[in-house]
Each structure stands twice: as structure tokens, then as C-alpha cells.
Length: 153
Image (cartoon, rainbow, N blue to C red):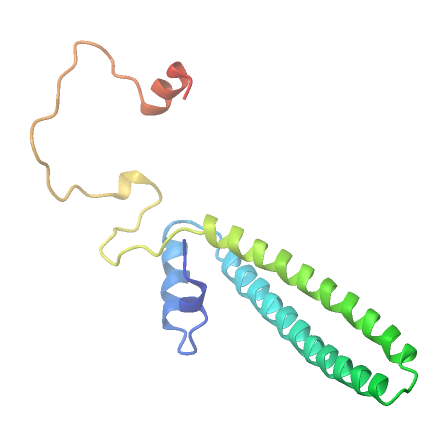
């Protein structure tokens, strides 16, 4: 999973390297921008919710003070209920945005090592070294996914 904090660093070098790495893998570079936009939206929603929470705390103190003085606080209580509902709504939206950010981070691949050769597919790979002898079978071996399907796993 990629680290979004690295992508958002102000100098932008990691972001440029990651973009190039994704291009080299024939990946969709627009997903990076989508991820960064989603994360900014998440941060804004959290900030808005925290600001509203501060207003709620201040209003609660004013209501308590008004009640101590024997004044009517029903109007402020109504405002407090509306504010509370707005805060819940903002936190729900922030949670949804966070879920979307995490999902996108989970599907984006890690940055490739600089030594990885660039190619259209696995034919662009190069063999660095070989260890041991390849086993010879008297039958055609099955791929791992075929074995899994046959075993029901």
C-alpha cells in the first residue's frame, strides 16, 4: 500500500517518481490525482467538522451560563441541535472519503525499484541470475491457480 503522506510532500520528488513508476507499469496515472483530490476533500471535511465542534462547545457553555442566570435558552438549544446534526453529517462524509482514500491506496501498486527494466510486459524482464537446476517433469505441470481451483481453495 502506498503512503499518501509521501505523495503529498511539498518538494514533489516522490510524487514525480511515483507517477513515472506507474507510467512504466502501464498504469492509470489519473488515479494519483484522484487519490490526492479525495484526500484533500477528506481533510477539509474533518477540518470543517472540528470547526463546527468548537462552535458547539462554545454554544454549550453559553447555554449553561444562560441557564445559571435563569434566562431562556430554548433558541440556542435549537441552534445546538442543528449544529450537532451538521457535525454528524460532516463526520459521516469524512468517514466515507477516508474509506475511498484507503480503497484507492490499497489498489495502487508500490513504486518500482529504479533497477527494474521498463517494458510492455514480462518479456521486457531480464534474468539477473539463476540458482540450482530446473526440475524436469514427466508430465505437464499445472499453474498454481489451476491447482487451487482443483483443490477448491
